[in-house]
Image 1 (cartoon, rainbow, N blue to C red):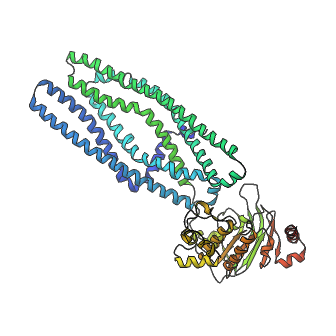
Image 2 (image 1 turned 180 degrees about the vertical axis):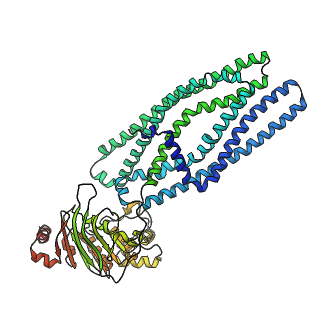
Image 3 (image 1 turned 90 degrees about the horizontal axis):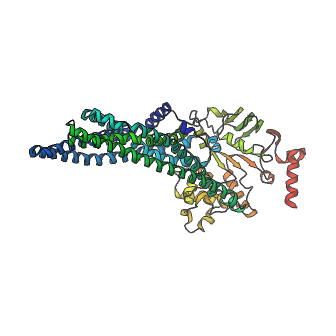
Length: 588
């Protein structure tokens, strides 16, 4: 297990806290009220103890006038305590909600602006854990830390200790003698609790990842009878969570015992020696009572330090996870909208080299050009880098070598948001959202009317099956649109692209996974979608791109053939070989 969170230094804690609170500085006025409330609460607690002791001495003296006066003081403190008990939770809760909501918005905005490789390197369960579990815990941390660690606790300790020394420095020293020993023992107990808590956090993140895999990969899970294999991962993560939680329970139980002794032993010492001081005339009964009450609060602060410090380390581990997301570099935001409808060269690559992993080349020398209004097909064996080229045109990766141009302008000069406004994409695997059919299509143009959505659906040959559903266009598709067939999902995606009506169209094998009937309707829909567009299509089945203006064949990261279908067939090269092999397999 990674123990980084258990080794965080004091300086790192300070830096993390400063950074964390700076993120929610907009809502810090609520936090400062809660901070002031912690100081007020501690001050009232200490002073009320002293007043109660004085009241007891006055009562024993028989001076009723002063006794009534002190009863008024007590009533004032009760009212003040009531007001504080309203203000503290109210503003603490307000700060928690607003800071948590603000942090969630920052994280969602950040995740939306991250580079594509962030999602390729991280499991979706990690992002979900940050957005849900981690931020929820930090929401409570924001007010609680201000209210406790930097206001109530130091105020109670300093004010209480000063007043205790003022009442009797001798009794303070005697009562304090046992506190360091108990505190040292509890610090030793807190360390394994801290490490076990970190282990629980990591095991929970793994559990969430496995759960996400199961939910999203349920078809594969069931098709390959993976219950035993995947079940073991669940069992291991659950077992680890259970094991570490048991460790925490044992250590906390032991800590509670020490806490019990740490509370009562000094209390007994106070009353024993306090009784002696009363007999000697050094202290009054009221002073011993007040001392016991106030010094008990001071001891309580000392007793809480190990567990609070342990919890702080856990919270800082959570904060570091969130800050790591927020510190991840964004996709670049600079550039311009350089679209030119008169430009004849729409998409081009020249001597492009690219690799995801160092020393493992994907594209080693790619050069081709897509002219305005033309249809260019990219073909090649699986793993040759076809989909990577689409991603490069969308600006998902910019660590390539060579030249990539859109409308004859270098990709790195484009503002990526504007670039993608001019490009529609239909992939082999369509992602549909857990919302209505109407909404899923409208994502192509969020301002489109219902009528425009329906027209797009009709043009995509999707209206007929949509109207056969129970709620029509208001039918909720469910997670990933799994309630529809592959062909139906493709037509919804095509309708979405039609609504967007971008001049450049990227198609990534949109018909390769469909049966004959579904492919027929999707082809008809694609023909309408392609009208008046510059089309760049990745194809696996070569029979689907015979009418392309140009076909580019890549192998081993290089363009090895280029031309139209008839030219390449007559050339009798690699394209002809692959085409004839596919035709033979289809006829067999």
